[in-house]
Image (cartoon, rainbow, N blue to C red; front, side, top):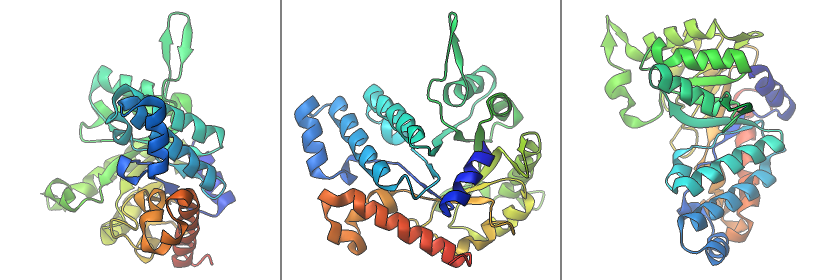
Length: 308
């Protein structure tokens, strides 16, 4: 699966992923009004607004980007209708040829991890039939249960040619409360990175592995170290833009081949029309604002990488 993502990055020239993390506050009033008129001010109405919002953004940017990353919590908050909107979004993005990274941050032990892995990346059997329930291409996984929690995901990755991104150094300000703590004189995130590199060797797909890592844009010096620790892992980089990560900070997340990382922006893209820079588009043309923000992000990152 990592080869498919790399091919899409090469074709688009865009090492970026758009985070489809919709909040009702991001969605223009004309969309929520239409959804509420159809389904009421209900969970179904909210989910319909989310779906219509996502669809317009995807229609506006799909040709510019290799991948999307829907964050499942933004859908789960609307219950079962929200999960249905998540699934519709995944399916629609795949119809558009986009690689889908499900930001689900799953992880547990034994049969529970197996169920998560089958539900999001693999298949389940129901009587004589087989189904791929959510059918993402990659998902994010919490590695802090150790191999007991990660092995079921590795098994499904090998069986189905899917991929995972394991949390190593996250972009949030308090991540250091645990991830930076010293263990035998070394920060925990380095030890986790070494373990991820070990697991990555068991899921190779060409020169890169289907096992990658999440490393925040907000910690570039740590990212530089982790790039060396995990040379065969693609790095999913959250924290660009709205969280403060800058393009020039991300150069060392990439390998010398120009590959090895994909940078995420969520509200900086999907709610671009609310920013002063894109305010001229207005709420009615929010998707055009998202397209302009994608074009600017691509130019910013490629400029920092010397790809102008």
